[in-house]
Image 1: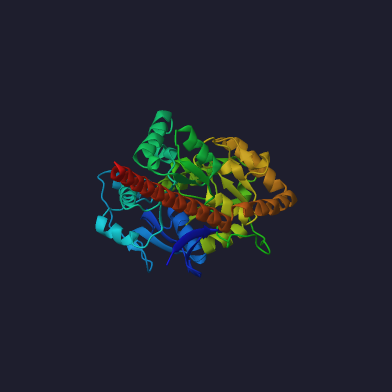
Image 2: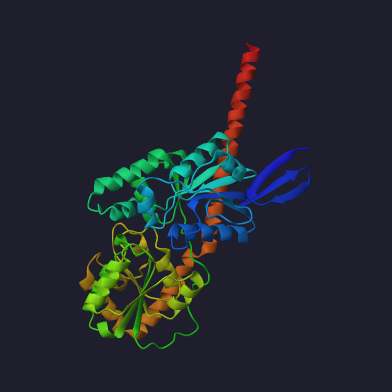
Amino acid sequence: MSLHSFYIDGLYFKIYDYTVCFKIMNIVIVIDLIDNLTNGSVMTARRFADGLKSRGHSVKIVGIGADGENDVQVKERYVPLLTEVSAHNQIRFGKYDKKTILKAYEGADIVHFIFPFKLEQKCKKLADEIGLPSTAAFHVQPEDISYNMHMSWFKPLNSFIYSMYRRKFYKRFNRIHCPSKFIANQLDAHGYKSELYVISNGYDKRFCPPEKRDEHEKFEIVMVGRLAPEKKQKILISAIALSKYKDKIHLSLFGHGPTYKKLSKQARKLGVDVTFDFLPPDKLALRLQQSDLYVHASTVEIEAIACLEAIACGLVPIISSSELSATPQFALDERSLFENDNCRQLAKKIDYWYENDEERLRMGAMYAASAKNYNIDNSLQLAERMFKDEINDMRERKSALSDKRANGKAEKADA
């Protein structure tokens, strides 16, 4: 009985003679940790896993805290000093165990890696050894690391990290998932030779405009993201303090992180009305729907799903025009951009949108419409295409190698 295999729109079919047997893709996602809901990359991995499952695929997550029916847990790896520092930024490192990973790889069609750390490096090596197709995502921006080392001013450090990532991990892949054109350009500029797939991380459908926005005692401004130096919540607080409408503004900062105490102290000193909190996605969507303006002051961003979620809820954004951030891609005009770190210019932009209610509501609808280009369904289709391309290429490489070996044996026999 002959066997033929092919893919249509990411779905894998096998034909035995005249019988067609449907087979979903069996996808393994490797990530150091999957149980920290305050980490953006973790939330992206969970969103992709859930989305792929909803499209009929079998998804197995490998990582610390992986507790799904088919998932495989790994233990935490302790790294002196680095473990303590990384904990402040919601990162823990998984420990490689060959027996455990081999179990995870059973029946897999492809492995997708989220981070470039030691666990992923060793899991990639094992996948190569057993001939298992694999792809990788680029989620850890070097500037995030240099900012948290308080060395953002030292540009050679960022170049070194890009180079280290490439040499130790990414050069082994034929295909890399880039969440934005910005980061794809960065990889290209730093000598990455793999095929780069620009695929937004996508946003959940629950983030959508409300049927009605409630009246508020104050003008509600919101920013979502980890409380960290590179996110620049301090610039937003300073801008509100400079606003003509300071006493009529309430700021909500949603996120956890190491700069919480400094930001709290700054807000008290400047007399800015601010609330700190962390909300699960369903409650966050409701808060965004009942806010008036979104500000994203971050200097460093690979994509900024938080900003995208706010836009999808119909909020006009004001975004830092930092050259190290992909977020300016969401701005529809200059009124939604301010010079990076320029709190005075940001204050003027806030005042403009405060004073122009009708225009803000009109533009909010336009922003919500623009967000549909980044919805999760589009992203999942593109990810399926990337997986399919790699699986097909691996099959062709194996076939070519088999033919080469067969020809070599034939030549020896003839000799």
